[in-house]
Image 1 (cartoon, rainbow, N blue to C red):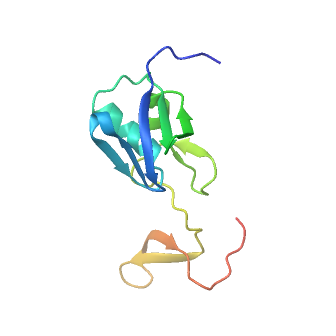
Image 2: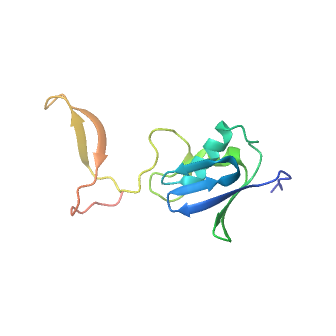
Length: 125
């Protein structure tokens, strides 16, 4: 395991969906705000090799080894673990069922997504 000699960037976790770097005036709001903040920091020109330290109050809640690594990840579709960042199809915390949303006429529908039906049991995948 290599040790970074770059000065860490400090971020504050405001709530479960908001993370902020005050000195840069950057705020990320998403279901994985620290990872989203890494992408914002890269766009703002921060050194991609700098670590990101995320605090909740005075307590270190998360350490991301490098901004580059954090920017390249998103939460896995099951909400557990990580996968490479894919952009628009970010992970949902809602389990998906076999019900599909479609567009078009019956018999010629194009599947555009799957949804959970409240109150309906969903089998393990």
